[in-house]
Length: 425
Image (cartoon, rainbow, N blue to C red; front, side, top):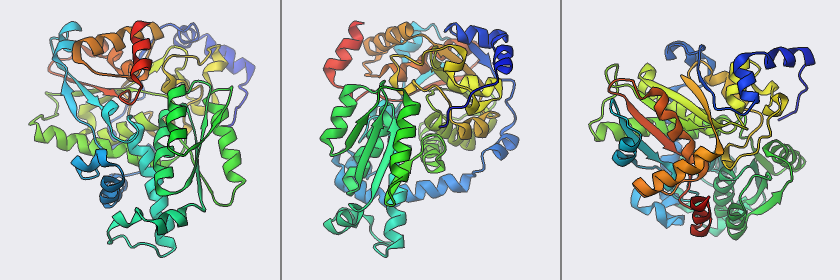
């Protein structure tokens, strides 16, 4: 993530734009994208296909016996890391949603690292481990992958280092999975990262680096250190197609979950999905998978904090990662630590700009209110970041017969005392 200085005149012209002026004042904004195109056309922007996502799902299936063995919490699902979705009737009633139904996709309950990052992050580490093991003759793709849980494999992987820059949740996924396999795991954490996440990583045998700056500094420093090590592998949250397809698997799985529940998405029953967005990899990948599964019948809506609307800013302005929220006078400080990103992924912005229906921003105060409300009504334990999706439902409440799905991106692994402090805010 290389900081780039915008031409002064171009920046001034942008600030005169009414929507960007509103963004720059940290006011809640809603923008229905004028870039949306039929998915048959928009998929050309991505550079990936259904086959790429199916390949990722097959790899996760190969590793399922290993995951079930080393993470007992995944044994019940046979080593498959997936979340349930719930019809949140009490929350629906409280929001006066009468023309559709409200559901939550409970990624806050995902095993191992407790967030949406458990799919993409763990997948990226597994594909790297498989690549090394195959290249060095330790495994063949048709063999039992539970043998990755052995001293032989751990000794082999201990020569290699896996690193990532993170505000928290991706770091948990990458760090925990890498350390479990035997890699030297390093996570470079921004100032926004919560202490409990750093503590959990260190308890899992991960080396944690802390920075006073934001996500961008953590990524830049982590990447430089990794590139200087011939045995280093840096997980690039901004540009990684491995992360992206790992997240996208969720869309295909949701389609099957809906089929099992006799839920059919079509022109008469559209699906609106509300995805909290930081740098964009997680929500972008999930949105791609949803589009592969449901085509133009799914509408993906991105949620960002008022101080960190990097994806909205990048796509709306057309500048993608060439502009940061700091360029328009925002602080990038928010209680939603997982969304505290100043500059969006250029890869995701360009890949998904014609596939996203709308964007909106939300204030920290509303996140606190929603966190309390969803806990009191539905008993769910969500991070502030994960509550951002709930705030988008009213924008589309008048759509007849819609199924509204809030992607609850994390929260269950938060210590009770930390959650109690958030509830008390």
